[in-house]
Picture (cartoon, rainbow, N blue to C red):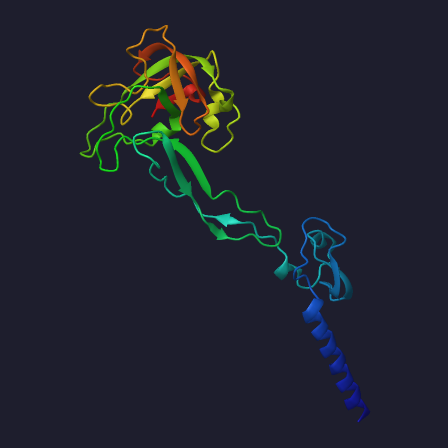
Length: 263
């Protein structure tokens, strides 16, 4: 009879401990990065001893983690998808912006790395309006962007025939606004390399090169070599300046950071 009473009392104690454990025990909600001696609780440890145990990353090395550390605490970084294709330009027939996005595939947990930017914007320009009519070639400054933009342009027409490869115009940069050097957004870092006194190469190619005129807006081909011409960086309307034409060439021979395309 005495043994039965003792056994019942033991069950009651275990049951009571179990209830307390469910309420406050373990690492749930207590996980910490690095070594943090304040990141502790009282519960069963990995070595099956009951007492002070830790929920920080250092406990793996010191082997004094709480029993559920490996199920509750491993940090999970944010995971994102690949970038989408670039959208079309927001406005036709004028410098504008295009957008690409990515989405979160896994939210961060347990102090994992936060999610990066989910949207990127870049300057662009389209040459047909919403009805598909070709935009007229307007006089005005040369609109330029990085050579990387030109790599994505089609090299053949809708019938599969090669498009005109275009040409290159070399300029000497005379001036540029200070806003070019402080631009820090992705896909606009190229503006930092627009430096006064340097020679730059700018490619004129379809669709920026109009078939009727065989030129690009602001290319300066009909201007005197001493004429001061204006340019504008697409993607940051505050980055602009002047240059002087050197010559027209068949291919651009400037370093990549000093090579751009008309847009």
